[in-house]
Image 1 (cartoon, rainbow, N blue to C red):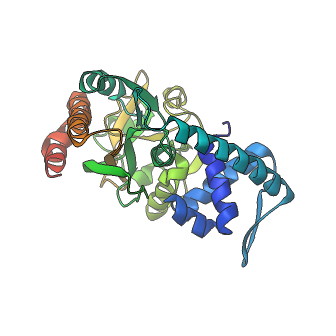
Image 2 (cartoon, rainbow, N blue to C red; image 1 turned 45 degrees about the vertical axis):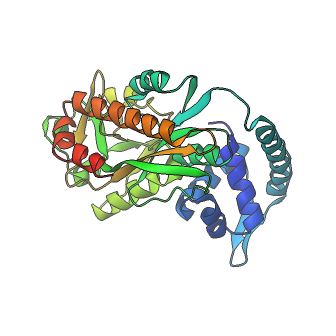
Length: 314
């Protein structure tokens, strides 16, 4: 893991707000998600950045040094973004990691004159990039009850109000032969951490597992999509989006009762896409996702029964 702009923005938000709860509100994410992000950054830089107590979050010496440098860098980035705003150029389109990304890009090439695609597992990162003008549009997946906290200049439209989160497990696993998997039956497994953990997905996983009577053992943190080798080798299980095709040695199954659900949202900056363009792109996003859902032997029946109707109800 390397430091990213969203990490610097989060650290500065904590420093400016003086507490994790207020900073989380400003960033539009949950406090547990921000705590997880802070802990990851602290592990990366090798020391505590804030001392937390009843009075709030106070920077340590290392934290003060990082805040000073991060603020200077962010000022330069904001100035650069302002200089570039309004200039002609390709539409910068962001997307969370989905199986339909390649098909979506093909559709976007037809819908827009010039487009570049940025794939990021973090919905928080995509939302911040949109808010700051570094992306023009994006497809973002969030927890069903999650709030993106986007500014007024960014419009949004729900692609699908909710879809279930599935589980990827070794094809040789005894549970892989079942049509669906009880979350409680995964109590003894080693888990690959969910992508975009600071978005709240890790908090959601822990809450669902706690309700099922166990605490998940997060043993691996890997880039989005890179967990398949660990799963195929029989070393781990991982949450995946329901259109996931798995792969050699990997089986994808529904979780009984859909204990975790996510919402798919299309967002765009109004000054970069006209309403007509946004409507066309929305249709292409929904079309690409629906096409992938229908191609999935595991997810197809759910999509035919519920998903298409949910999407059409928007």
